Image 1 (cartoon, rainbow, N blue to C red):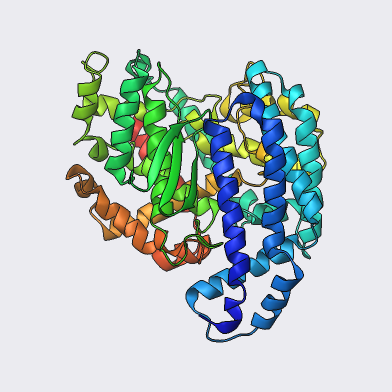
Image 2: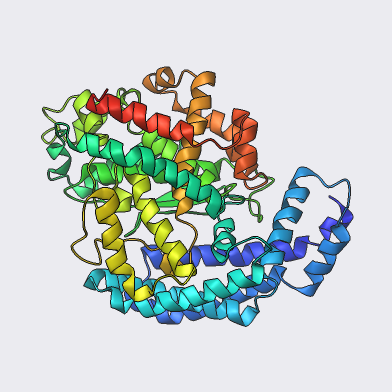
Length: 498
C-alpha cells in the first residue's frame, strides 16, 4: 500500500463503521422497528450521520488528499478511492456537520410523515417536510455547483456521473416519441388474459417459493437475508451481508415474484463485488443506473422470459395447483408481459415503466428550478399521468405519495431507473453475442450468466463509472437506441403488431 494513502486508512475505516451502523438502522426502521420509534431513533441517526460526515470531511483528510495529488504508483483500489473521495470532498466540504445532522434528522422524520400521509391519502401531512428537504437540497447543490451546471445537474451527478439535464432531455424525448405511440397502438389490441394472477394466493406459500426463487437465481443465504417491507429494496453492509425485502399480496402473485427477481439482481451485484473493494467507499455499484441495470436485466430480460420459466414453472404450479391448473407456460409468461397503463411505478409493466419516470423527472426539475410550488404537486402529477399514460390517480396514495425517494432526500435519483433500463438493454445486446442465453436458461445454468456479469461489471464495485463499464463491455458509448429497439421488438411481438 502507498505510504501516503495509508494515512487515509483510519479515516476510511471510521467512515465505513458509521456507514454500516446507519445501514443497519435504516434496515431496522423499514422492517422491524415499532411505529413510535422514529422521533427518538432519528436523533441517533442524526448524530451518526454527523460523525460519518466528519470522519472524511475534515482538514486532516484534505491535507492527505493534497499530498496524494500527482502521486504515482497507486494501485487500482487506491486510485478509485482517491478519485471518489476527492469528488465527495469537493461537493460537501462547504456543508457544515451541523447542517448534515439537521438534514439527516429531517429525512428520518420525513419518512415517518410520508408513511402517515400515504396511509391517510393526504399529501398535506408530508408536504411541509418535502418543502424543507427541497430547501436543503438546493442549498447543498449551490455549494457544489460548478460553471455550466444547473442546480439539478448537481443533484443528478450524485447518482449518475455525466448524465445531466441535456443528456436526459434527449433520452426522454426519444422515449416519448417512440413509446407513447406504441402504447396507444397496444391499447387497441385484444387484452391479454391474466386474471389467474389475481386469485387467492396464500402468502406463506408465496414466501416459500420466493425464497427458493431468490436462491435459484444465485442469492446466497449464507451471505444474505430476505425480509418484508412496504417498499421492496436492497441494502448491503458489504459483500457478505446483503439484504433484500419484498412485499406479498394475497391477490397478486406476480408482484412478489418480480420484486424478488428484481431485488435479487441488485443483491447479486453487491455479492459479486471483489473483496478488495467491499467495505470501502468504492464497495457498492458503479452508479445507481448501473445498479438498476442489473435488477431490470434480471426482472425483465430474464424473469419475464419463457426460457427462464420453462424449467421451473412446474414447481410454481405444484405450490399453487388450483390457481394455475389451466394455465400453461406460454400463457403464464404472456401475462407477465401484459401492458396496461397503471398508477404504481413499482407495479408497472416493462413498456410503461419509463413513462412513470418521465413524470417524476419533469416535476423534480420544476421543483428545483422553482417553477412550481410543492403544494401543486398532486395536481401536476395527475395531469402528467393523464397526458403520458391516459389515466388519472383517484387519490394522493395512488398518485404523488407512492414513492419514498423524496422523503429520503433522494432528488435526482429517479432518472437512474430509466437509465438502468437503457443500460440493461445495451448490456443484453452485447451478452447475446457472447452467450447462448436462452439455452443456458432452459438448462438451468443461470450461474453462467451471473458469472458473465460478475466478470464484466460486479467485481469492480464503484472503481469504474457507468460510462466506463458500458464502453469496456460493449465497445461503444451509452446508446439508448438499443433500449427503444428492444421494447419495440418485444412488445410488437407480444401483441402481434406489425
